[in-house]
Image (cartoon, rainbow, N blue to C red; front, side):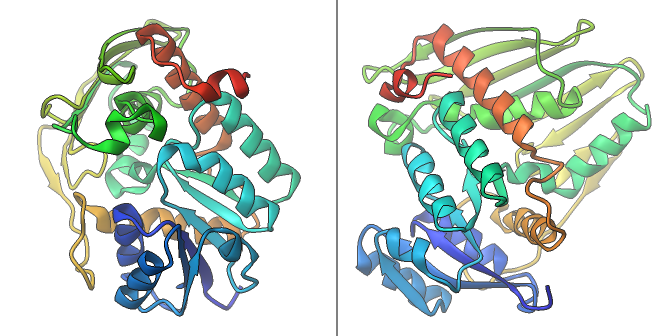
Length: 339
């Protein structure tokens, strides 16, 4: 494919801004953002003007029908992911969907099945896995430099209890879906993608019935344990430590790491390029890595990424469902989309 991959953007919120801003640091010969849609036309138009995007749409149908869009990035709130994913796939678009892929395993399975049946690329946007330090960690594990992996300890917390997308059940809120996807994927990355045999969790919920703080243990075959904590009530260390029989490594700001404490205790530092506009979130320029992964997969005719496979996403969804059940968080969609 000599021509650039043409992106459509579904939702004109903060994460979509960061994604488009990050894509702008990649070669224009490879990536082009050609359209944006939002529920309100004014929002889409403002976004388009800021980012120099030629087409702005009110509502998502028009974006789905745009013949000049190859792939759609879905940056909408959690509870809209499934519906938008279905819409885009129905209209023949490849999809990169913000995490969590869907609200539960039932929705995720249906979306994955639909993408496979239609021969379209689908990936959950777990951008962390495309950062250079994630790749380096995987290489060290594969080469045996850490020995047998025994423990992954990861925590992710900010004061977010007044943020609507996190505190409201109607938006698919809660830390398990918003932050837990990161801590779960980190445990799975450390243990090579194996499924845990047992999940044990406890948590604190708000009046809405969504979780504001969760502690969980993922017990892996062979005795390894992933220990994770999420919180919307307080700032946590936000590090991931992977411990093996021969040594350990630490990812700092583990979901978008630019600092890595190696097996020998040395600190490695990474950098990101400058973008046209300021970003909303930490190290968001790193969203460029997953965008390039999507392009490479589509060019090669792959329908999924080896780093965030459909199996990975379905496993994460299943673990999220188990944790929510144990903590007592239930969505209307759980019954509607039973596995």
